[in-house]
Length: 305
Image 1 (tube, one colour):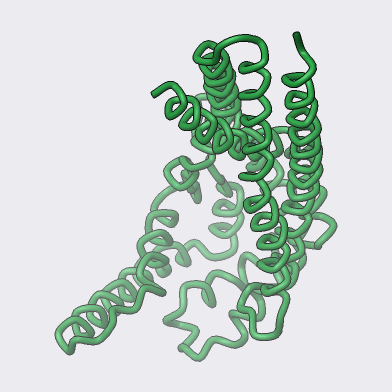
Image 2 (cartoon, one colour):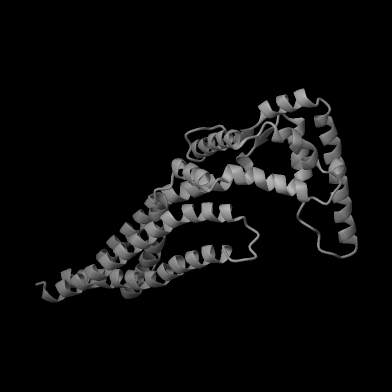
């Protein structure tokens, strides 16, 4: 019975070590708001984003009078520069970081109220026109969805929400609350910080139980050797899966035919690579220490009196 319990504890210790190394690497990978801002500037996000909007407006097949973006963009184009966009995004990044880490209780919000005031000075009727257009777009979307359902076709997902979101923004002071969309960031922060200590505490308790269930010094050393050796063996698979899988995933996105813009892929790569390098290094060190320690434990179990 004791052997079965110790074997079970060894398995969960080894499994926990995989999560412990992952959480440790994620927390201490060097990622920060400054590194994110630097990546956005390096890949010229703000210039590329404005160019993408310009391209979308110019390539649309719909009547410009029926396209809210086509109506709004000529007015926004005069006011929105890469520098303006950078200032707004970097402020938003700081707000998101403060909220997700618990330093602020105010959910992050993207506010471009100053743009609304400038647009109103150029054309006071444009907001009411956009609201009417967005309502009409919403009706068309609802009708298309209804007809698709009646004919048994797949309901198109693209285009359902923009009209609702745009109408909400237009009726407000050009303020977009983002907290409800970023709850996962709070959970990620909780797991990477609290999870590290929880998993570490459980692993320590498992080692203590394994030693308590063992007999004399030789048995304790032998079981510690088994624990570390099994931890080394169990982590070989996730080590290769995470390191090779992440590289293959990033490489596949850069292939021809990807719908993701190249600058977005480069930003993602610049954020993932530090974590990946940190994870690989931590895993290599941990596996090396575990293997060496298990060998020493087995040797000690033989020579100890």
